[in-house]
Image (cartoon, rainbow, N blue to C red; front, top):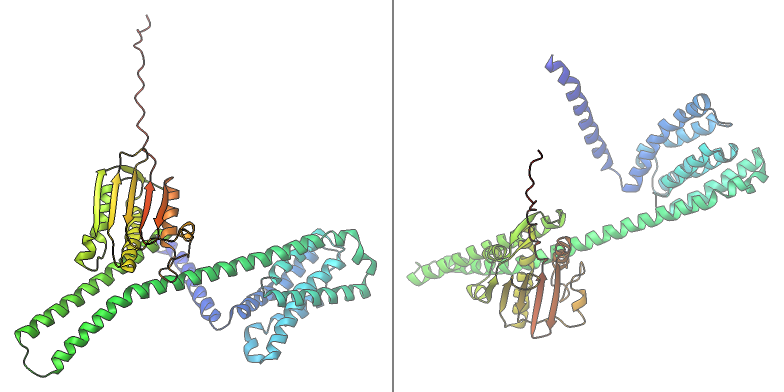
Length: 441
């Protein structure tokens, strides 16, 4: 019995999966606009006869026209095979004529023949929404041509004076507003897509920049090993020592690249997380985790970082996101030291301050005063092309979510200091003491 009850559900699921796979396989054959037209044609082939029955028998309207709908249906039928049936400009002309007929012409004509009734006023509004999901210029051309043709036909078959009646004109601002809103929404999506692509390009550039230097080192060591092997002479003790050092450098660079990939993945996963605080975190444990996890290139680079714990403190946050913040700050500071060719980094944990804080100070190249207000903006990086521009923006978003703040002070060619200040934890409320009460007698 259990098998029989599960079978229909499994069958439906299998049919859904097969339909989705067939749908996606069919979609890949066409560009976006063609696929949109094909889907619309499927809807038209079903919807036009169906709604003729609805508006004629179930909810009768003053006017409908079966021939008008059958012509529209006939225009929709070839859509899935349009690439084979029509070539070049004929295909574009077919799409333009079909869209113009089915959407603005047909809906406007039926709207007018039904005296601007509520049903057809709303139907015309929906047709405009669908129409302006196509490219704006094509939609505007179709709208002008379709409305003009519908008005001309109505003037022949109906009362031309109705076109200037109040019940028609008062709908025009609504239709115009709908067109403007849809166009702005489409433009907003286009801008957002471009921003995503720009962010992706910058992130890929950052990853390639960070991994290229270790790869160059690996390549140089491999070429050195190959030269020694190709020499054909028996390796001496010095050769074995040099080969061992080269293999050690390769191993170090591979480990460094793996650490950098982990850092990028950690930052990327932080972007997708909910940022609200849900843990009590020790700042000293975060700093220790960052120092332990960061892929220092050399021991001298590690020695340039000094941690000063004046007083540890806990704050409301998330441990892993705190690590992301400090990893980004440490990475930026080490880059500043590298560009300046000098400097040290000092991390100070100061829980005794009025607002518990962490000071992150480097004496590298510094940041110009004109650039300082921009560093927390998304996709802004200084120097240009030195990173993806999302690290510090992410740090600020996380700190804001925790009701904490991050500020930066800097002087060019001198120092940069990031101050991370956290709200002091509220003391737990003291238990209420009630005076002793004598039992009632």
